[in-house]
Image (cartoon, rainbow, N blue to C red; front, side, top):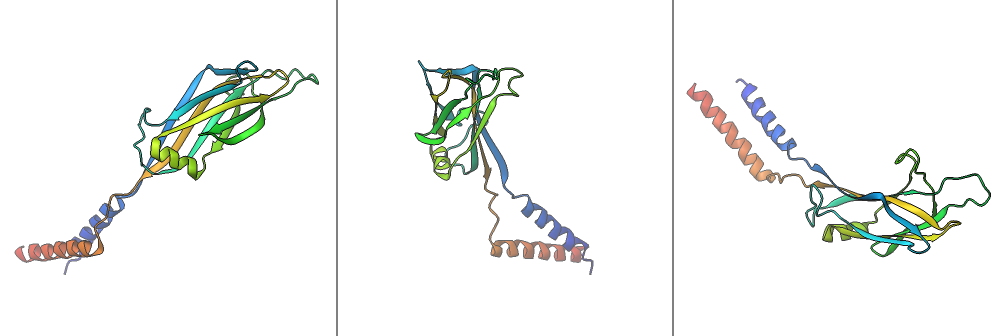
Length: 193
């Protein structure tokens, strides 16, 4: 008996089964300006939101998000080497929860954006749950203190990563039935030859 047709059929079944794997997805929302906002004594707070549902590709509510990172970039006055030079302290809130700070920020306008001070915040599962339900996340950047009490928020970004579930695979009984039918078909075809 020639086993090549059977091996070809089994190879095809395995190939089709392996094609049903998860696909990687990524959603990005960016807010930027020149600067996005200037924070000082008179206006120490910037409030906005990330909205993944309006960007390309748009986020579909309820799609599982595996992880997400909010990133903020700052530029401040250059360090002139004087004893009076201080970094400004910033706090960052996501959906009303303090997630960073108050911490010093620095960064420089020269050789922008390479010299910006970058703050990366990995989102907690609770914040990811909010993103999955609404596609949005409020954020607030607040200047807390500093010698000159001013700094520049240059850019804000949210990157969320997820994956589509793999295509459903037939249960074991259906798979065995399909293979059995294929083998019977091969046997019938062989007898006709």
